[in-house]
Length: 244
Image (cartoon, rainbow, N blue to C red; front, side):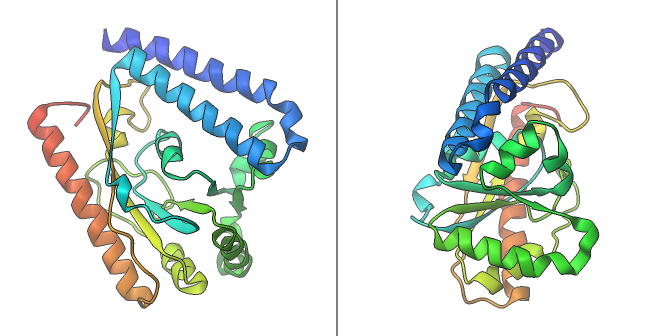
């Protein structure tokens, strides 16, 4: 049943994605907020499919900790699913994404029209000046910037590889940072088509107010996210849910 449900879900999920991209072509000239609302709708429909077909439920914890207004959301990154599960936490979201994603037909132009920030890693440190300006504009506009501090997906339980970009943005913009731990990789693993049933936890941690040094912020962010992620994995190992 696991394989069958996963196949059915994947077929419907990618059909939904392609269908909404095609239907959304006129939105390439729409206002940013309209494109974001359309992306949020895609996220809700996709999560609904995952719950209905695969039995994967979502449990959002600590949402009362989310401060109003602009901030940086720094989340653990284990799965493609992260893009969808974080949307309900950020009513006016802006993602930092790889430049390569902006080159995908239909998808890239829509994301850029929706205000997403594409970064070209080949430029090295030269990207940080432009990124600081963009992120500061996002936060001052009362929006939520979503960033994955490790930069790429990491398997559950893997050694963390946090990069310095998020600490640079935190100190350069003076923004509050909201750490988020999650266990998506247990239910939607990397490099696998299987989608596992169970309760997926998105754990919103205490906000980190501005004012810390880069090193102090980096240490606190990593320690808190990793500790919460380890607790989630321990619970799942005990319950036998997902793929571990």
